[in-house]
Length: 189
Ligand code: 5GP
Ligand code: MG
Image (cartoon, rainbow, N blue to C red; front, side):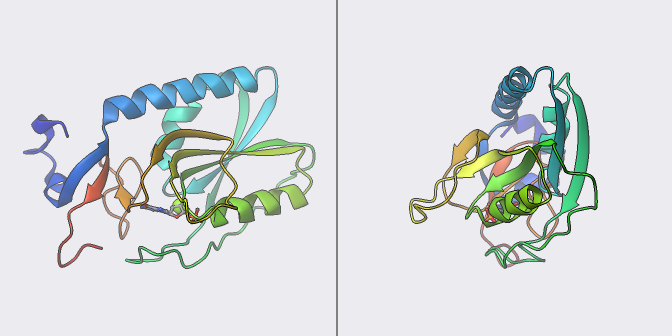
């Protein structure tokens, strides 16, 4: 945690520890963007970004991509309200023309992999030429050996509930610049 933020940012009162500080996020996201830019050079790309958790990651990532790219934002809800256990992904894909498109699905975290698997399947079935996955955080889930790994990820993290840099608890904490673990308390998970 940047100590100079504490007096300014009341959210840090609820934080137990920083897991990934902002400088590390910036460096890794820039590297990941440069890698994607090389892999998709000369091609058109459609990014399907899962709102709202991927919002800040997406904004940083796309500015590293000097490509012709289209953005499709979709809302997927797995953790309604104060839940910290997934209730299963629910989403609606827009009626765009997916045929022949190269698609990159961008999300904040790959946890059980259910959200990504459902999205990839839905986009493939609409005729996309290729569908790859890109997440900010890949959670270590040794209990799920059949989980499909993401094609691209910035960090691997332990299996604990994280907030910040777009990730929320009850729609709060998305504006924290670092990725953090919440302090446990009456009102917290
Ligand atoms: P999956 O379907 O892979 O189990 O879950 C992925 C979704 O669950 C992510 O899009 C994310 O919204 C949510 N999620 C999983 N782990 C966390 C976490 O530690 N913190 C937050 N804020 N959301 C999480
Ligand atoms: Mg999400």
